[in-house]
Image 1 (cartoon, rainbow, N blue to C red):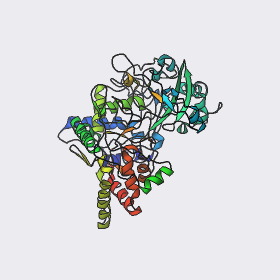
Image 2 (cartoon, one colour):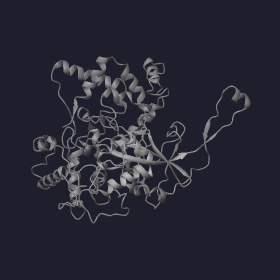
Image 3 (cartoon, rainbow, N blue to C red):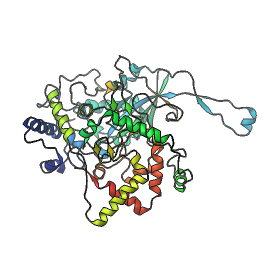
Image 4 (cartoon, rainbow, N blue to C red):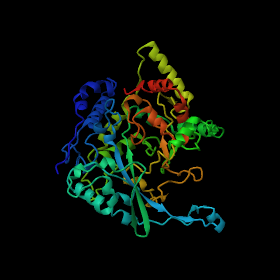
Length: 518
């Protein structure tokens, strides 16, 4: 199979035109900085090739990759924007099935039709042999989640993927419509990993393992340099402020007609949570502020991980994804030098913040102003804060919030080394109940490091107009759809929004659509 090359078509043809507006310009007096930004822009736009001669000493594109340039995924609204669902990252995560005991009931209770209740076992969960799990995919040796890339530079991946779907986890083959005689590039991977759903179960030794799929939509990079500059103490202060307010915040719509309608439709829960965000703490002591789960501390880490995972480039400190058909493969050298990485990071950091579009008429302005007011009144601004530290117009608190069961997602996006605690020990594979659900947050504390499955970092809403589809996996195409799926800490605001009149909801949407890409 020949190596795949890709293009973003008209977007790239027009690149010289819109880059003049969408991309940062250095101070004319600072020639060094100007040269670095120009180099960073070229690296961002560069379409990589297998065994690329422009590679420093590595193997160029891949061998595994999801795109052949940064621009291929980050292009909506200009260079550095978000991406469509077709550019989603696909993950597969392994979990140990939590075994449950059954409480016995007496004769009278059985006659009355009472059913026994399951209860978690008290003994520690069984330990899974990671070496056995790694036989399915080498990434599982050090991580609980592995990415399933869309492309490869040779046909070895196609052969392995077919074997994996058909032989290793045969239930998956049926879900993606795999046919024995089909062309691997025609396998319908897009229908494989519906976020949060159990895809397959497999016994590994004496342990029952369930595999759960996930999707991650491409986020916009506009204004990330400003996000990187926000002091950690600001996030700590906002979290403390929310905790104090939550202590005295009763649910104010327990008898809401909209709530009852939502419950009948299977949306929302009867027991919402107050807005009480958590700072995402990483094992090295830093605070996470990037990524859908707030699992990345700095823009540098975020950029290097994307180079390694999405493009298959070997960069300093972050290796490429392991090859499932060739465990132990190592790139011959670095594809990007430290100096080139610094230039790419500087370019991304200098991407301008999104802007607010000026109203076209006085009436348009009045609608937007009222929409902004309603946005605050229904409670959206509690988490989507207009200002964070000194950063204006971000509409986020960058904290982790419990968004309910419907948005629960078990995947962990990152390089395999992230599961290593640094002392040679690897995190144990977490347990899930037999139905694939996680423990109740009210009964069990969230994890010390990172996010729980129901927790998500509040995504910045600046640039909203040009950043759809919405939510972590792009499942929502409209504002109303995205808001209606907010559960947990977002449910009260969601219900207040849905209780607005149709005209008022349109005003809120007009306000958010005034937040545009730069």
